[in-house]
Length: 457
Picture 1 (cartoon, rainbow, N blue to C red):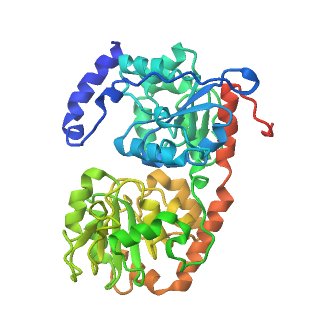
Picture 2 (picture 1 turned 45 degrees about the vertical axis):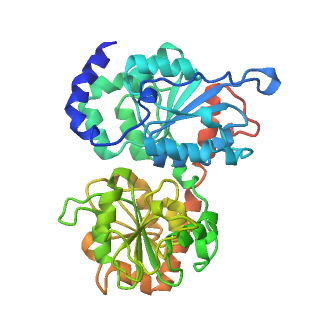
Picture 3 (picture 1 turned 90 degrees about the vertical axis):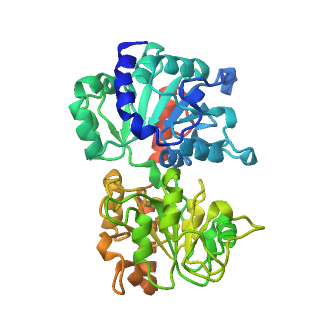
C-alpha cells in the first residue's frame, strides 16, 4: 500500500452512497485478479509478437475500437480491458464471441479483461497477469497508480482518440500538481482536435499532442441506401422489430442513450413520451441499466393487447413469444442492440443531451441515414456535433421545441424531403472526417516497434 492508496480511502467512503446504489459485478476482477494470459507466441520472422493492451472505459469507447482492432491483430497480440459491466459485456460481444471466430477482430474470451481499480496491489496483480509491452488508453482514463506501475516496468503508455472536455479540464486544472506527473509520463497523446490538444499541453504532456481526428467517425458502417429499406441493411433489425411487435407501417422514433432530467418529468423518456406526435411509435434505450425499470414506468408500464397505453420491454420478448401487438411504446433494456433499433427508426433522438449529462454520440444513427435530433447539452461531443451542424446534418433542439403540431418531431415525421436532406448531409460529413483509425494503428504499432508494410512515413 502506498500513500495514494491511503488517499483513495476517504474518497471511497465519501462516494459510497453513490456507488453502493449501483449493481456491480466481478469484484475479483476489479481487484486485479485476472487469469494469467498465455504468451503471445511467435510472429513474423519467428520473433515473439508484442502485446498491446487497449483500455476502453465503457460501451462508447469499446465501440470506437471496432475498426481499429482488425488493423492491429495481424501485427500484434491485442488485449482489451474495460471498466464497466455494460462495457465489458459489449466488448465480449464484439471481440470474444466464439460465433465471430475467423473474423479479423476476434480476440478470444481470455483477451477481453476487467480493468482494475487504481489500487497499487490490484494494478500489480493485473499487470503481472496481462504483461503488456505497451498500453493505449482510449480518450483519457489516466489513473496515477496504473501509469506509475507501467513506467516502473518500462511499459510505455499513450492516449488514443484523446478527449479532454472543457468541463473535465477544469477539474484537472484544479488538481494539476497531482496529475501533471501522470500526463508527463505519456509516450504520446493522439487527440481529436486542436482544442483538446491545447488542454493536454496545458496539463504538461512531454511531447506536443498529435491531432489525429476522432476514430468514432471510422467505427460506424455507412448505410448508402435511400430511406425506405426496412432495417437499412442491419441483419438484426428485422428480428428486433418482429420480437417487439413494432409496426413497420407506422413511423418510429428511436431515442438512444436516454438519461434522467432535473425537471418534473424526471427522465428523457417521459419528455419524449409527451412530445411524441399522435400515432407515432416511440422506442427508448436508456444508457444505464439501473434506469430500465424507471424508464419502463415512464413509458406506461406493461402493455396490454389491443391498447396503446403500455410499453413492451425487449428483455421479455423472444421470437417465439413476441410482444403484444398494438402498443406504441417500447423499451430497449438490453445491451448491444441499439444499432438495430436505430436501423428501424424514422427519426432518432440522441439522449443525455436535455439534462446535465453532456450528451451522447450521434454518429451511429446518422451513419445509418436516420435523421437525427440532439438536445442543447452535448459538451462531451462538442466537436462531433459542430461538424454535423456545419454540414447541416443534425437538428439541435431545446426540450420545448420537440412536441406539438409544429414541433421538431412532428415536422420531421411529416417531411420526407427534409429527412432525406439530413440523411445525405450526415453521411457526407462522416465520410469527410474518416481516416483517424489508420493513423492511430500506425502510431500504436510504431510504439511497439512493429514495422507495418505500406505505412506512411
